[in-house]
Amino acid sequence: MNANKATILIPGRINQRVRERVEAEFDAIVIGSADAALLDAETRAQVSGIASATTIDAGFIDAFPNLAIIANFGVGYDVVDARHAATRGVMVTNTPDVLSDEVADTAVGLLLNTVREFPKAETYLRAGRWVAEGAYPLTSLTLRGRTVGIFGLGRIGLAIARRLEAFGLPIHYHTRTKRDDVDYPWHDGLAGLAKAVDTLIVVVPGGAATEKAVNAGILDALGPQGVLISIGRGSTIDEDALIAALAERRIAAAGLDVFADEPNVPQALMDLPNACLLPHVASASVSTRNAMADLVVDNLAAWLDGRPAITPVPECAGLDRSKD
Image 1: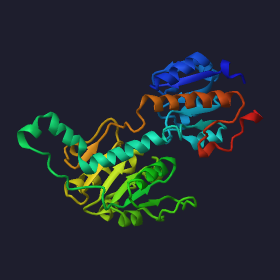
Image 2: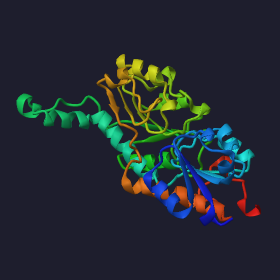
Image 3: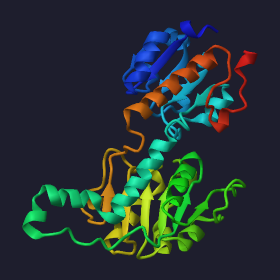
Image 4: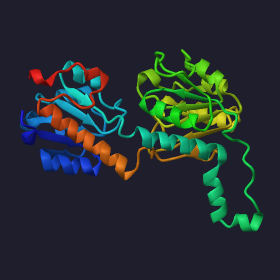
Protein backbone atom coordinates (compact mmCIF):
# COMPACT_ATOMS: atom_id res chain seq x y z
CA MET A 1 0.00 0.00 0.00
CA ASN A 2 1.18 3.49 -0.83
CA ALA A 3 1.01 5.50 2.40
CA ASN A 4 0.64 8.75 0.45
CA LYS A 5 -2.77 7.60 -0.82
CA ALA A 6 -4.02 6.12 2.44
CA THR A 7 -7.11 7.61 4.08
CA ILE A 8 -6.63 8.50 7.73
CA LEU A 9 -9.51 9.26 10.07
CA ILE A 10 -9.14 11.70 12.97
CA PRO A 11 -12.09 11.30 15.36
CA GLY A 12 -12.39 14.15 17.86
CA ARG A 13 -9.70 16.51 19.08
CA ILE A 14 -6.03 15.75 18.64
CA ASN A 15 -2.71 17.58 18.79
CA GLN A 16 -2.56 20.18 16.01
CA ARG A 17 0.75 18.90 14.66
CA VAL A 18 -0.79 15.45 14.16
CA ARG A 19 -3.66 16.95 12.20
CA GLU A 20 -1.39 19.14 10.10
CA ARG A 21 0.90 16.26 9.16
CA VAL A 22 -1.96 13.86 8.46
CA GLU A 23 -3.64 16.43 6.21
CA ALA A 24 -0.34 17.08 4.41
CA GLU A 25 0.75 13.46 3.96
CA PHE A 26 -2.49 11.46 3.63
CA ASP A 27 -6.10 11.81 2.59
CA ALA A 28 -7.57 13.01 5.87
CA ILE A 29 -11.10 12.76 7.23
CA VAL A 30 -11.90 14.65 10.42
CA ILE A 31 -15.07 14.03 12.45
CA GLY A 32 -16.25 15.47 15.75
CA SER A 33 -16.15 12.26 17.79
CA ALA A 34 -15.53 8.51 17.56
CA ASP A 35 -19.03 7.85 16.22
CA ALA A 36 -19.11 5.67 13.11
CA ALA A 37 -22.62 6.90 12.33
CA LEU A 38 -21.07 10.22 11.28
CA LEU A 39 -19.73 8.48 8.16
CA ASP A 40 -21.51 6.54 5.42
CA ALA A 41 -20.53 2.98 4.55
CA GLU A 42 -18.57 4.00 1.45
CA THR A 43 -16.45 6.46 3.40
CA ARG A 44 -15.87 3.98 6.23
CA ALA A 45 -14.57 1.47 3.69
CA GLN A 46 -11.93 3.97 2.55
CA VAL A 47 -10.38 4.37 6.00
CA SER A 48 -7.15 2.44 6.51
CA GLY A 49 -5.78 4.30 9.53
CA ILE A 50 -6.99 6.17 12.59
CA ALA A 51 -5.02 8.84 14.46
CA SER A 52 -6.68 9.43 17.80
CA ALA A 53 -6.52 10.68 21.36
CA THR A 54 -9.94 9.41 22.37
CA THR A 55 -11.83 6.20 23.13
CA ILE A 56 -11.72 3.68 20.30
CA ASP A 57 -13.89 0.71 21.24
CA ALA A 58 -14.54 -2.59 19.54
CA GLY A 59 -17.70 -1.38 17.82
CA PHE A 60 -15.90 1.58 16.30
CA ILE A 61 -13.05 -0.63 15.12
CA ASP A 62 -15.48 -3.06 13.49
CA ALA A 63 -17.17 -0.24 11.57
CA PHE A 64 -14.11 0.09 9.30
CA PRO A 65 -13.65 -3.05 7.17
CA ASN A 66 -10.28 -2.00 5.76
CA LEU A 67 -8.78 -0.53 8.90
CA ALA A 68 -5.09 -1.44 9.30
CA ILE A 69 -3.76 0.75 12.13
CA ILE A 70 -4.83 2.88 15.08
CA ALA A 71 -2.11 5.34 16.12
CA ASN A 72 -2.81 6.54 19.65
CA PHE A 73 -1.50 9.92 20.79
CA GLY A 74 -0.09 9.16 24.25
CA VAL A 75 1.84 6.43 25.98
CA GLY A 76 -1.27 5.24 27.81
CA TYR A 77 -3.61 3.45 25.42
CA ASP A 78 -6.27 2.04 27.75
CA VAL A 79 -8.84 4.04 25.77
CA VAL A 80 -8.20 1.78 22.77
CA ASP A 81 -9.48 -1.81 22.68
CA ALA A 82 -6.10 -3.12 21.58
CA ARG A 83 -6.96 -6.78 22.22
CA HIS A 84 -9.93 -6.58 19.89
CA ALA A 85 -7.89 -4.70 17.33
CA ALA A 86 -5.29 -7.45 17.36
CA THR A 87 -7.95 -10.11 16.64
CA ARG A 88 -8.90 -8.08 13.59
CA GLY A 89 -5.27 -7.80 12.50
CA VAL A 90 -5.32 -4.09 13.22
CA MET A 91 -2.09 -2.60 14.56
CA VAL A 92 -2.26 -0.29 17.57
CA THR A 93 0.64 2.03 18.38
CA ASN A 94 1.36 4.49 21.17
CA THR A 95 4.02 7.11 21.90
CA PRO A 96 6.46 5.79 24.54
CA ASP A 97 10.03 6.96 25.17
CA VAL A 98 9.69 10.43 23.63
CA LEU A 99 7.84 11.68 26.72
CA SER A 100 9.59 9.68 29.45
CA ASP A 101 12.07 12.38 30.49
CA GLU A 102 9.48 15.16 30.48
CA VAL A 103 7.06 13.16 32.61
CA ALA A 104 9.84 12.08 34.98
CA ASP A 105 10.90 15.71 35.40
CA THR A 106 7.30 16.62 36.23
CA ALA A 107 7.03 13.82 38.78
CA VAL A 108 10.09 15.07 40.62
CA GLY A 109 8.86 18.65 40.46
CA LEU A 110 5.44 17.63 41.75
CA LEU A 111 7.05 15.71 44.61
CA LEU A 112 9.13 18.74 45.58
CA ASN A 113 6.12 21.04 45.35
CA THR A 114 4.09 18.68 47.51
CA VAL A 115 6.54 18.28 50.37
CA ARG A 116 8.11 21.77 50.31
CA GLU A 117 4.97 23.75 49.37
CA PHE A 118 6.73 25.87 46.73
CA PRO A 119 3.49 26.92 44.93
CA LYS A 120 2.02 28.09 48.24
CA ALA A 121 5.22 29.93 49.10
CA GLU A 122 5.15 31.80 45.77
CA THR A 123 1.49 32.72 46.31
CA TYR A 124 2.45 33.99 49.77
CA LEU A 125 5.14 36.22 48.28
CA ARG A 126 2.96 37.55 45.45
CA ALA A 127 0.18 38.40 47.89
CA GLY A 128 2.56 40.68 49.82
CA ARG A 129 2.45 38.49 52.90
CA TRP A 130 6.25 38.20 53.17
CA VAL A 131 6.39 41.94 53.70
CA ALA A 132 3.30 42.09 55.90
CA GLU A 133 3.71 38.93 57.95
CA GLY A 134 7.32 37.86 57.69
CA ALA A 135 8.88 34.64 56.46
CA TYR A 136 6.80 31.81 55.05
CA PRO A 137 6.20 29.13 57.72
CA LEU A 138 8.66 26.24 57.86
CA THR A 139 7.41 23.20 55.99
CA SER A 140 6.69 20.16 58.11
CA LEU A 141 7.73 17.82 55.28
CA THR A 142 11.02 17.34 53.46
CA LEU A 143 12.62 14.85 51.10
CA ARG A 144 15.42 14.28 53.59
CA GLY A 145 15.24 10.83 55.13
CA ARG A 146 12.48 9.60 52.84
CA THR A 147 12.22 6.23 51.11
CA VAL A 148 10.51 6.19 47.72
CA GLY A 149 8.37 3.40 46.32
CA ILE A 150 7.58 3.38 42.60
CA PHE A 151 4.46 1.55 41.49
CA GLY A 152 5.27 0.73 37.88
CA LEU A 153 8.96 0.65 36.97
CA GLY A 154 8.62 0.94 33.22
CA ARG A 155 10.31 3.54 31.06
CA ILE A 156 8.90 6.50 32.99
CA GLY A 157 9.20 4.86 36.40
CA LEU A 158 12.84 4.05 35.78
CA ALA A 159 13.54 7.62 34.65
CA ILE A 160 11.99 8.87 37.89
CA ALA A 161 14.03 6.41 39.94
CA ARG A 162 17.30 7.53 38.33
CA ARG A 163 16.51 11.15 39.12
CA LEU A 164 15.61 10.44 42.72
CA GLU A 165 18.77 8.40 43.18
CA ALA A 166 20.63 11.65 42.56
CA PHE A 167 18.73 13.11 45.52
CA GLY A 168 20.20 10.39 47.71
CA LEU A 169 16.87 8.65 48.21
CA PRO A 170 16.55 4.86 48.48
CA ILE A 171 14.22 3.37 45.85
CA HIS A 172 11.85 0.38 46.11
CA TYR A 173 9.40 -0.77 43.45
CA HIS A 174 6.47 -3.02 42.64
CA THR A 175 5.81 -4.49 39.21
CA ARG A 176 4.12 -7.74 38.20
CA THR A 177 7.52 -9.30 37.55
CA LYS A 178 10.90 -8.46 38.98
CA ARG A 179 13.32 -6.60 36.73
CA ASP A 180 16.78 -8.12 36.32
CA ASP A 181 18.45 -4.85 35.29
CA VAL A 182 18.08 -2.90 38.56
CA ASP A 183 19.20 -3.47 42.13
CA TYR A 184 16.28 -1.71 43.83
CA PRO A 185 14.33 -3.86 46.30
CA TRP A 186 11.32 -5.44 44.56
CA HIS A 187 7.99 -6.08 46.28
CA ASP A 188 5.61 -8.65 44.85
CA GLY A 189 2.57 -6.73 46.09
CA LEU A 190 1.55 -3.09 46.32
CA ALA A 191 0.66 -3.38 50.01
CA GLY A 192 4.14 -4.63 50.82
CA LEU A 193 5.67 -1.74 48.89
CA ALA A 194 3.50 0.81 50.71
CA LYS A 195 4.50 -0.59 54.10
CA ALA A 196 8.21 -0.40 53.22
CA VAL A 197 8.21 3.26 52.08
CA ASP A 198 6.80 6.63 53.05
CA THR A 199 6.61 8.12 49.54
CA LEU A 200 4.64 6.32 46.83
CA ILE A 201 4.82 7.37 43.17
CA VAL A 202 2.17 5.82 40.94
CA VAL A 203 3.16 5.45 37.28
CA VAL A 204 1.08 2.48 36.11
CA PRO A 205 -1.31 2.66 33.15
CA GLY A 206 -5.06 2.63 33.53
CA GLY A 207 -7.41 -0.27 32.89
CA ALA A 208 -9.22 -2.93 34.88
CA ALA A 209 -6.02 -4.38 36.36
CA THR A 210 -5.12 -1.12 38.11
CA GLU A 211 -8.59 0.34 38.77
CA LYS A 212 -8.49 1.95 42.25
CA ALA A 213 -5.38 -0.07 43.09
CA VAL A 214 -4.36 2.65 45.53
CA ASN A 215 -7.22 2.27 48.02
CA ALA A 216 -7.75 2.99 51.71
CA GLY A 217 -5.68 -0.02 52.73
CA ILE A 218 -2.70 1.06 50.64
CA LEU A 219 -2.93 4.61 51.98
CA ASP A 220 -3.06 3.36 55.57
CA ALA A 221 -0.01 1.20 54.89
CA LEU A 222 1.81 4.29 53.65
CA GLY A 223 1.24 5.89 57.05
CA PRO A 224 0.76 9.35 58.59
CA GLN A 225 4.04 10.68 57.15
CA GLY A 226 3.19 9.23 53.76
CA VAL A 227 3.20 11.19 50.53
CA LEU A 228 1.39 10.00 47.40
CA ILE A 229 2.35 11.21 43.90
CA SER A 230 0.24 10.17 40.90
CA ILE A 231 1.19 10.87 37.27
CA GLY A 232 -0.09 7.76 35.44
CA ARG A 233 -3.86 7.51 35.19
CA GLY A 234 -6.42 8.95 37.57
CA SER A 235 -8.34 5.67 37.60
CA THR A 236 -5.58 4.00 39.62
CA ILE A 237 -6.44 6.06 42.71
CA ASP A 238 -9.59 5.64 44.82
CA GLU A 239 -10.23 9.38 45.06
CA ASP A 240 -12.84 9.11 47.81
CA ALA A 241 -10.41 7.09 49.93
CA LEU A 242 -7.62 9.57 49.19
CA ILE A 243 -9.76 12.56 50.17
CA ALA A 244 -10.63 10.88 53.47
CA ALA A 245 -7.01 9.91 54.17
CA LEU A 246 -5.80 13.46 53.52
CA ALA A 247 -8.58 15.09 55.52
CA GLU A 248 -7.99 12.77 58.47
CA ARG A 249 -4.20 13.12 58.13
CA ARG A 250 -3.81 9.36 57.76
CA ILE A 251 -1.29 10.37 55.11
CA ALA A 252 0.60 13.66 55.11
CA ALA A 253 0.13 14.93 51.57
CA ALA A 254 -0.56 14.06 47.94
CA GLY A 255 0.47 15.50 44.58
CA LEU A 256 -1.70 14.62 41.59
CA ASP A 257 -1.39 15.37 37.89
CA VAL A 258 -4.17 12.96 36.84
CA PHE A 259 -7.75 12.45 37.96
CA ALA A 260 -10.54 9.92 37.54
CA ASP A 261 -12.93 12.22 35.65
CA GLU A 262 -10.80 14.80 33.90
CA PRO A 263 -11.10 17.74 33.70
CA ASN A 264 -13.49 17.50 36.64
CA VAL A 265 -11.60 17.49 39.94
CA PRO A 266 -13.60 16.86 43.13
CA GLN A 267 -14.12 20.07 45.08
CA ALA A 268 -13.33 18.19 48.27
CA LEU A 269 -9.88 17.44 46.87
CA MET A 270 -9.28 21.03 45.80
CA ASP A 271 -10.26 22.25 49.26
CA LEU A 272 -7.59 20.18 51.02
CA PRO A 273 -4.50 22.17 52.08
CA ASN A 274 -2.28 19.09 51.84
CA ALA A 275 -3.07 18.33 48.19
CA CYS A 276 -0.92 19.73 45.36
CA LEU A 277 -2.83 19.54 42.06
CA LEU A 278 -1.82 19.96 38.41
CA PRO A 279 -4.08 19.86 35.32
CA HIS A 280 -2.51 16.80 33.61
CA VAL A 281 0.57 18.63 32.33
CA ALA A 282 3.29 16.00 32.79
CA SER A 283 4.19 15.83 29.08
CA ALA A 284 2.81 19.25 28.19
CA SER A 285 5.79 21.01 26.63
CA VAL A 286 5.86 22.02 22.98
CA SER A 287 8.94 19.94 22.17
CA THR A 288 7.62 16.77 23.81
CA ARG A 289 4.14 17.03 22.32
CA ASN A 290 5.69 17.64 18.89
CA ALA A 291 7.80 14.50 19.29
CA MET A 292 4.68 12.54 20.28
CA ALA A 293 2.79 13.90 17.28
CA ASP A 294 5.59 12.95 14.90
CA LEU A 295 5.67 9.43 16.30
CA VAL A 296 1.92 9.05 15.72
CA VAL A 297 2.26 10.00 12.06
CA ASP A 298 5.51 8.10 11.53
CA ASN A 299 3.80 4.95 12.83
CA LEU A 300 0.97 5.44 10.34
CA ALA A 301 3.39 5.95 7.47
CA ALA A 302 5.53 2.94 8.35
CA TRP A 303 2.70 0.46 8.83
CA LEU A 304 0.73 1.55 5.77
CA ASP A 305 3.88 1.35 3.66
CA GLY A 306 4.38 -2.28 4.63
CA ARG A 307 7.13 -1.63 7.15
CA PRO A 308 7.09 -2.60 10.86
CA ALA A 309 5.34 -0.23 13.23
CA ILE A 310 7.81 1.83 15.24
CA THR A 311 6.09 1.49 18.62
CA PRO A 312 3.48 -1.28 18.57
CA VAL A 313 1.64 -1.94 21.82
CA PRO A 314 2.27 -5.40 23.32
CA GLU A 315 -1.12 -6.79 22.24
CA CYS A 316 -0.23 -6.13 18.59
CA ALA A 317 3.50 -6.82 18.61
CA GLY A 318 3.04 -10.11 16.73
CA LEU A 319 1.25 -8.63 13.73
CA ASP A 320 3.17 -8.61 10.46
CA ARG A 321 1.99 -6.07 7.89
CA SER A 322 4.56 -7.21 5.35
CA LYS A 323 2.47 -10.34 4.69
CA ASP A 324 -0.53 -8.31 3.50
